[in-house]
Amino acid sequence: MTTDMPARMLRLLSLLQTRREWSGHELAERLGVTGRTVRRDIDRLRELGYPVEATTGHAGGYRLASGAAMPPLLLDDDEAVAVAVALRTAAGGLGGIEETALRALAKLEQVLPTRLRGQVAALQEATSTITWESRGPRADATTLAVLAAACRDHEIVTFDYAPREGARASRRVEPHGLVASGGLWYLVAYDTGRDDWRIYRLDRLTEPLPTGRRVPPRTLPGPDPAAYVAAKIATAPVRYRAVATVHAPADTIRARTWALADRIQPLDDSTCTVDCSADALPRIARTLAALDTDYTLDADPAVLAHLHAAGQRTLRAAGSGSRD
Image (cartoon, rainbow, N blue to C red):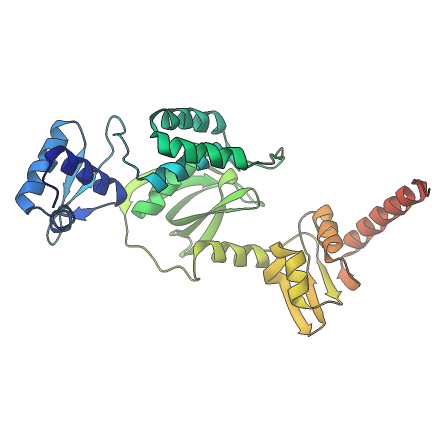
């Protein structure tokens, strides 16, 4: 039982920050106090400016709502270290967030206890990051935040979307989850206009607007959003077809081309097929090079022409090299 009122109120605030909603009974059990004490402490938090809302339902409850300013976050030791390290390595695939992440990190490190500051420093000193200049599209951080909140709250959103082919059009969806893959971000959502599940690339999505309407979560046709996106990408139409019959076990090829796990099919213990089809010819060439073994290829003429030209360049380069 937490008898010290300031400590109890800090514990109450911490609980409210860890979950969307708590019943009064649950909070009383966690704090070891009566429901009346919980109500009094909630009133004290409101007097201090924390936007704690009462919720309706079978037994009623409480949640920490958004306010004019974000209240102080209460993190345990592991959470503080995780946030600090994540901020240091933040912003992969996101635009305009690097400087913001560094400002947040500076604020966090300023208030970290000495024991945690040492852990964070040790992790940062022992960890190196290779930063590649991204040539692809980057997702907008604000868009990501809006959609993440909609996924959490099961709130319908609208936005404009530009598909790879066709005109930009409005969408109205029930967001389910966000997936990062290959430097891109995807939204998995149920499209109410098409009455079906869809995935949307965030770099093609603009002006996401929450509607304020919340709906019960739907059951995704798959184990999780990441698996759903992977399956959709693997079966999506592509510009160039290329299927290799490889003289190596499927498990060996999966280890060499991990990104193509769903496109590798064993024929027997020593042979498999690899679907290398893609929208870009250089990507097909890189995948075939990663096989590092003999194979036969069934591919579009454009793929064969690209591979022939690339092979000729490689032979010329090898012939011009030093043979000492």
